[in-house]
Amino acid sequence: MTIILPEFYHAKSALESNNITCISASDAAMQDIRPLRIGILNIMSNIQTYEFNLLYPLSKSILQIIPVWLKLNTYTYDTSSQEHLKDLYVSFKEAISDRMLDGLIITGASVEELEFEEIEYWDEVQSIIGYARKNIISTLGIGWGGMALAKSIGIDKTRLDSKLFGVYPTRNLSTHHIITGDLDDIFCCPQSRHSGYPDAILETERDKGMLNLLGYSEEAGYVIFETTDRRFLMHLGHPEYNSGRLQEENLRDQAKKRTDVKAPVNFNLDKPVNSWRSHRNEFFSQWIKYIYTETSYNWLGS
Image (cartoon, rainbow, N blue to C red; front, side, top):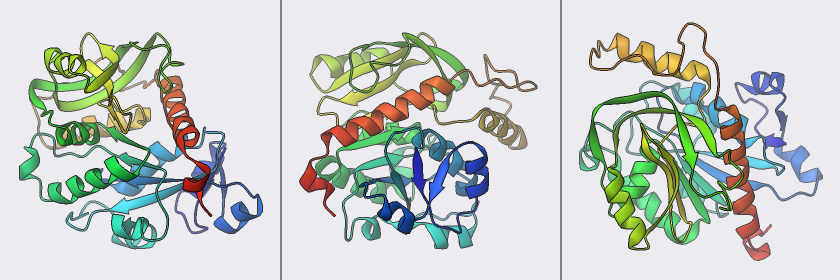
């Protein structure tokens, strides 16, 4: 479908070469279709190179999407272009100043080895999450973003003995679910994290009526789960990644001399194969569809 982007967007030609239709806001207005505004709190390193990882699956929706790129006031984006940040990103307060967000994505961040309270921007993230729980139809947390959502409802992460890194087969636990129901019974998904949750902890929260458990991997544990009101959807993997991202993270770990981090499993660094593309596209498309079906006409506004 169509992603609505400013004319100056740096990767527009790259997106179009991958069969993603990009149009300006003025052209979109002429089509008389109300687009969904999806806020994206991008806390990844090198924000501009990561953006493509999300724009591609979001473009697979049948709806028009306006990505609203969000920045934190309390975070120093020292690995990203300051000019790009200034041109494209807005604060959360600015994003909701005149129109609601229909959905929100909180990305991963390379801080999961820290306790939440040690992170300089944690208070600001908490404030955004608190607002989202009351005012945004669905918030998707990816990787660390999923852990941040879990923390906000009282579920704290546990440090793993070693980094979970690679591509893992994952079982669909809810084939009738509105978002995950059409995923394959077994699908592949990249993981890149130092933290997670013991199965028993999440199963206890499920039994208390707090969570729905949606995806499970024998090696990675529960990968996808949600709050029972469906406001928060947590995906501890990285379905949005392209194969090059795993290569980049492996090189980053090597550059940091992380001898404790092994090469990604089930993934050939020399001949990378993307075995999770269908999972990525279907997951994001169904999430966007869910937001649209839950959005009232009055909410859509003008």
